[in-house]
Length: 237
Image (cartoon, rainbow, N blue to C red; front, side, top):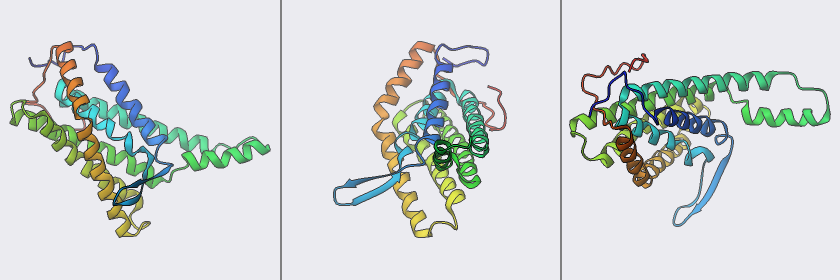
C-alpha cells in the first residue's frame, strides 16, 4: 500500500517525539564526558559517552523512511534541528545569566559552564552534521528501497547508515576540531567512531526490523518514494 499526504497515523507522532528526545539527550548529556574501555588485543579506547545513544536517532530515521517515506522523515529531521537550535540558545542564555552571589552558586556556575558552555564551533558542528547526515541517510534509504523493490532491508539500513554517518561524523569532527586536534588524532577518532556506529546499527538490526514490521502492519502503510520531491528545504509531505 502507498501512503498519502492526507492520511494520519497512530504512531508517527510518537516516533517523532522519541527521535527528538534521543537526539537532544545524546547532544546534551553525553558529549561532555569522555569514556574509556579496555578492549582485548586493542587496549584502552577513549570515546564520547554519547556514542552509544546518538546512532539510535539514525535507526529512527531508517524506520521513518522505510514505513512513512522520505517526506515524513524530513519533517522529523527539521523538528530535531529546531530542538537542537533552541537547546543551544537556551544553554547560551543560562550560562551567561549572572549567578546569584553566594558560595554555592559560584561553584555551581563553573559546573554549568563545563556542561553547557560549548563553543560556537561545537554547536554549529553538531547541528550541521546532524542535518546533513540525516538527510543523506533518508535519501539513500528511500532510493535503495525503490531500486530493490522493497527487498534486502538489512542492506538498505546498513548502506544508508554508512553514507549518513560518514557525513555526520566527518562534518562534526572537521567543523568542531580541525586546527585544534592533531590531524592524526582526528583521523583516529573518526575511524573509531564511524565503524562503531556501523557495528551498533548492525547489532540493533533485529530490533529495527521488528519495529518496521510492526508499524507497517499497525499503520497499514509501506511507502515507496516514487516521484518524491527530495528537496530538504521544504516541510511538504
